[in-house]
Image 1 (spheres, rainbow, N blue to C red):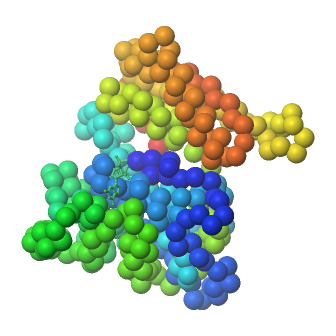
Image 2 (image 1 turned 180 degrees about the horizontal axis):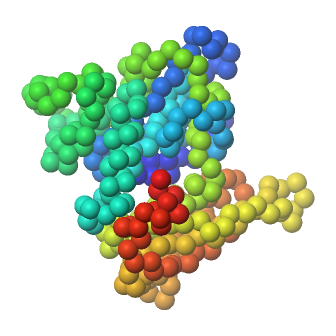
Length: 330
Ligand SMILES: Nc1nc2c(ncn2[C@@H]2O[C@H](COP(=O)(O)OP(=O)(O)OP(=O)(O)O)[C@@H](O)[C@H]2O)c(=O)[nH]1
């Protein structure tokens, strides 16, 4: 998950391939939804950030034409690639297979993949594990699925890859095979060019400059969540979440400066012991979560941000449909 978190605020001259002309006539535009899926650590976030160009300014959609959560948008030449979120693949900490949360995530995955135009299935070049297999099993029939063999730079002899590619061909009727490295600009351009003809000819859904349709409030919760999981490692079960209680903008005391942002958030955990993990020794960990979230939000939003975080114990929230909705899981 958290594919969007490493994206920085839009800055001039940065980024890869976002050379869209706002003047492409609507009848010559291509636009479609693309899902990036794969087991943890295969490089989904890196790929997404590189495709979007590391420049996410938070803008709103021209028209909400997709019912999915959008993690990033690349508009390049005549084409707009709309990357959608597939939360079910982000279940690194699946605690129990039957909770309402997991049912909900699985449904989201299936609905998402059934609805996109292209699926980029990421694996590490030369590898195919049981986890990769689980993800591959969820691929919808009749949908173009690309096998993206990422981290090609880690393969020293390219010839070694051939037998692996041949085996992979027998696992699924992949539409395309793309061996590449997400950290190489040329590979990113090439991948976009391969995806392009799969996007339907239709007008763009978003402005040429749009990079995501997520709100600042949502971004704040994702960033706090990322810090929470990064700083607690495997100690904290995946059934912990972050809820933004209040999000407000206040005028800066300095004339002409951007408004200040105040975020009050709650980290929801299931047990007292989890609360202890989040708070840490003498509150050190919670303090660090807050500080790191604030620093990143200030960088993304280009303004002063105040972050206040509380930790609350709500046992069984992940099994409770009403609470799931309240916490933003549809
Ligand atoms: N050598 C190499 N490393 C890469 C490449 N792409 C990603 N990585 C590294 O692989 C690690 C995992 O990348 P992520 O982009 O966080 O992977 P992810 O699939 O989003 O991971 P989750 O969020 O855990 O699902 C990071 O250390 C990346 O720098 C690549 O093409 N080559």
